[in-house]
Image 1 (spheres, rainbow, N blue to C red):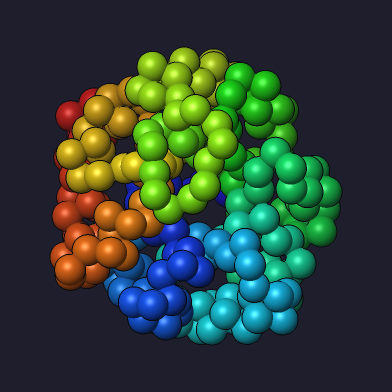
Image 2: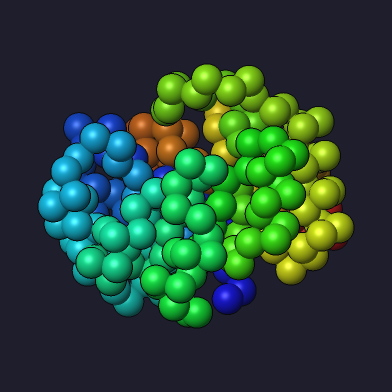
Length: 218
């Protein structure tokens, strides 16, 4: 499946103090996000299915797909469009078998061994990171930086030219252009979107910045 990865709005459970998560997902989808990812490392399976189902409902009519971080079972139970999997999660081949050919499967790339695995996997997109330091997630791995992003992106382009590749972690509006110049097709954003004073305006700004950077890099 051809994914539009220009702006991945990552709805993390930690954002629940701002507004209900389905509401946040809908605002982002209506103002320029091209894919929504729901991430919750703490909730019970039942709670995650409830939240994901509400998000599926909230996104109806927007045309923006929802992927669930880590949890193939939650994606299946909620009717989400797919999953985003890390190296320690279910392998992409098994996820594809369970979710079917039309599901979206995204994979995390933190290093070259991840990139090699992703190049062989039945994935629709990959996300490289963390590119920069971030406050949104405890990350024991050193950020790959723009240089690492460029190297990993080059490898994936050579082995999977069809694969959309995003960048995550510490992405601010000012960093969009250098990240796209380093080879990313888009960005995944949490805090800079959802902790902005005006979430809708921030989403519009990010989408414009991504589109302009992609246009300039062609």
